[in-house]
Amino acid sequence: MELKAIQLTIQQIVSAISAVLKIEVEIADRHLLRIAGTGAIKPQIWKEMSNEDYVYRRCLETGEPVVIESPGFHELCRNCVHVRNCRELGEVCCPIKTDNRTLGVIGLIAFTQEQRNRLFTDLQANLTFLQKMAELIASKVMEHEFYLQQLMAQKKVSMLIDYMENGAVILNRQGECSYMNPAARRLLHIPAETEPDAGVIGQIADAVLHNADGIWSDEPVALKLGGKVKQLLVSMQTLSINPEMKEFVVFLNDPEQITHIASRLTEDSVKGFEQIIGNHPSMKILKDLARKVANSPSSILIRGENGTGKEFFAQCIHRYSERSGKPFLALNCAVLPEALLERELFGRAEERDGQGEGKPGMIEAAEGGMLFLDDIGHMPLSTQLKLLNFLEHKTIPGAQRQLDVKLIAATAQDLDQLVDQGLFRRELFYKLSVFPFYIPPLRERKEDILALASHFLQQHCAFTKKYIRAFDEEVKKIFLSYHWKGNIRELSNAVEYAINVESGTVVSKNSLPDYLRNVVLVDANGYPAEASCNLRMVEKDAIRRALLLVKERGEPKDKAAELLGIGRATLFRKMQEYEL
Image (tube, rainbow, N blue to C red; front, side, top):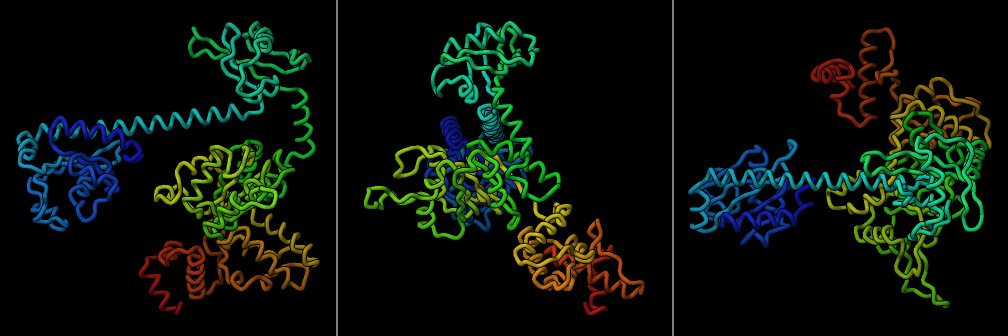
């Protein structure tokens, strides 16, 4: 949590401190950005300290108060731009800390002799007061952080309830309804944002409140809805946090819908995801989560290195969802300049054709379906703002109605870091990552490498019309030993190359790309495999293999010494000896 998140509160606090002590007050965050101030300092708010932050930096580093009685002449001031010419006549600063974190610094600054006298006449009392104010600010930060956590938790619970497939109705002891989720409204034919019909709620209350033990038979309950009788499965749970205000959650299910879902799952339990090759636990979790949220209108953020198959995963979500019959459009945010990117996304409302209609962008063209935005981290800030506005209001400039488009974004970048650097809007980040997915790189799920390689073998053989039935054992070991910096895309390319070169029916090492032929074979623990029995040859080959391995991993040569169990100096001496 940063101090700037509660800047208004902090400014109010420093104004009150200054009014009480009649001394100027200044607060900077841990990045030495001025957050609040009074008097002559106030115009400097939101400006970084530049070559004048040495006192505050010491306070941040030590976590202890700093007292400067002669600003400009103190040891800490020797590199300051105001050395020997400082307008300050005295300074006392104190760190703002919480949970062993230093969030910033609060300082009392005297600019006049009168303020200096007030500051140092009773220094200990002023320092104690300043420390108490630092604790107050820290507590306000913690309160805000707790508030955000509670808000996020409430939002998550609300979202889960709103998008669950079961209908949910909350009733009190008198049979009055205090909440009804969208699924229940659909089942009971009650339009959104309208008061539930008292007659319908009365029927539900009569059906469940006499059965407070929550034990139900398999027989559905008949409800009269709009002049017709509808059979619904009903169950109930008691909310008894406060016995005096006991409420009941009633769950509703449509037997026909349950039958339909069961039939659909029986016929094709992996629809949309059958092409995702992988039995690694992380991939199973990903596919299970994707099935659960595919029909939610909320956004999805897919993270993963280049080549892990983020767009393919998004396509699988689309095929599995109820939007499969609607468009799936994809756009890479990194390849277009800002103006063209905005035009592709939002269209040009000012460009009219002969019928007076604006030219639609991809958001409008994806109506009812899904829009996949790859490399979202490269999107310019101004475009991010327009995308955020669309996600919040479901409208775009020139459109006369709300648009129903599910957004899936993807990135190989660290969006959290981009947010901290101010390069990506925090609000958009939260809006996009309602359902975050992380696709692990291929090297973290080696169990899937050979299965993927076999899949690509069949795929590329069909395309090239060649008959190759397998990989030999040496090729399999190479595939399992290689680092696969390009992930699945690189593996597919390597298999395609080998199929085109191979003249037999089994892919051999000689058919692989050059860079794979010299891969250091490693065991299950990542160590180089055994070589020959000649001692010098074993040593030379082991060092060569270790050096190649760390080079493939992009690691320094020192790591080779760790793999070999020798010192750094020994490694470089051996390298010189064997001319490696």
